[in-house]
Length: 114
Image (cartoon, one colour):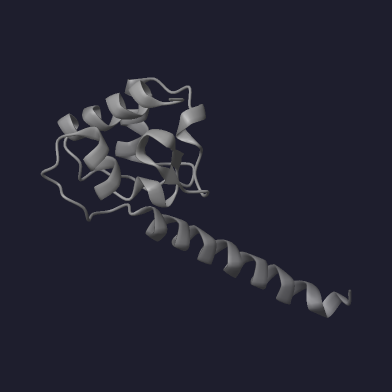
């Protein structure tokens, strides 16, 4: 590779990484949408777009971007924090109420691996 091509490749890689990050955040459904009045875990999971990224048998979800939730070892408290705050490639879902976050966490933890 010629030395003059290296800056172009660095720029290309940075642009692709930025585009992938944006696509991931948008594709996972963070930042709004869904039925914010829902109070049961399965409905919140569906309405929030969780299946766009996560596999989870209890929700018949086959997403391949985020972790397979059937293999998760997170506690309910950790699920609530991760969904509310996001991080590590996952968008935040801070628009969900604490009751909705708890219902979602109970669903994910209670049904994983089934």
